[in-house]
Amino acid sequence: MKKNIINFKAFRVEEIKGDFKSSIKKVSISSIEPNEIIVKVHYSSLNYKDALSSIGNKGVTKKYPHTPGIDAVGIIVQSKTESFKVGDKVIVTGFDLGMNTNGGFGQYIKVPGEWALRLPINMTMKESVVIGTAGLTAGICVSKLTKLITPKDGKVVVSGATGGVGSLAIYILNKLGYTVVAITGKVSETEYLKKLGASEILMRNEIENYKNKPLLKSKFAGAIDTLGGVILQNIIKSTSHYGAITCCGNVASPNLELTVFPFILKGVSLIGIDSQNYPIKYRIEIWNKFAEEWKIDHELIAYSEINLDQLQDKISLLLSGKSKGRTIVNLDNKLP
Image 1 (spheres, rainbow, N blue to C red):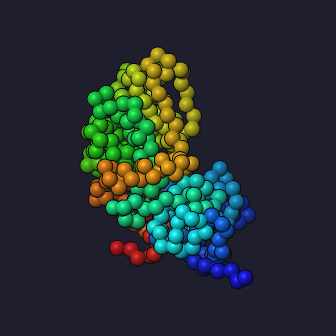
Image 2: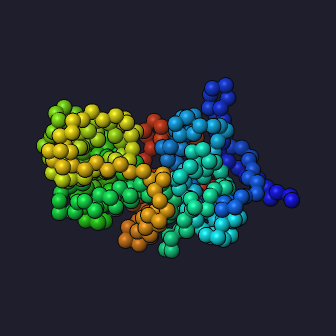
Image 3: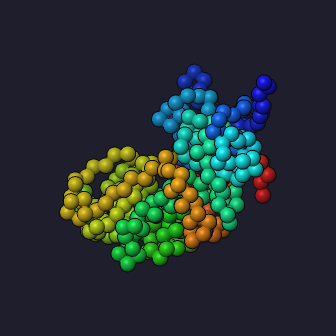
């Protein structure tokens, strides 16, 4: 039986004598197996994991050549699962997509059907990818946090405020009535953060230089931390009695130097967030919130739209800490 082969373009990362180089290549996908789908990708987005994969981080991607892209939204062109049919619009984020399974920086992906969910009603494909894994992560953080603290309990601080997770978290929290403090190292983005809903801006170096004590004066009822390291340490130490913190990143550092005092003397809760393997049934709940009560005004969220040829420059900006908001990748090459 002749295989149905699809040829297409992809952003490929190759390992050549220990060096990692990226370029646009022609690649192909052959016929699918039972319970798999092939999706024609209309949009992807750039995340920190994608940037790490593109420079050969073996903690993210073990084998090369490889196509990064942990986000993909598009239309099913082949299906061997009862859950989806050809023509369905779907979102695929996380799981192994873009890590060791070729990801959304290619015009087609082949994945297990259980990794996909239907694009919610009242949401376009472009709107969904502006949200992407960053928004899913922010949504999970907010969902966990709001079960433990209310707007009346006090301020919620968000670190990495101009990044994808941080900016979307600020927007949702403000929409839900919380008073939000944004932590940033970018003085120039103060007005942008206030437009998102931050009522107060805390400079990164200020919180990094808090006194090195086991406990600090209570400042926050809760927090969403995207950075880790000393910033998370000082947030924990500065959280009020019975406050809660969600932790979803380690860009600053994976290490924490703490005593147990915030946890046993103040009853502070530290909640780890794993959006990569978050169960589909709970993902659907988060995505439906984005389509309804968390509906985003996309004019407020900073994002840029690029094609595959522009991707390497954006990766360099992200790795140097100079990116802002979200970067979405148009696989149709039809830019505004």
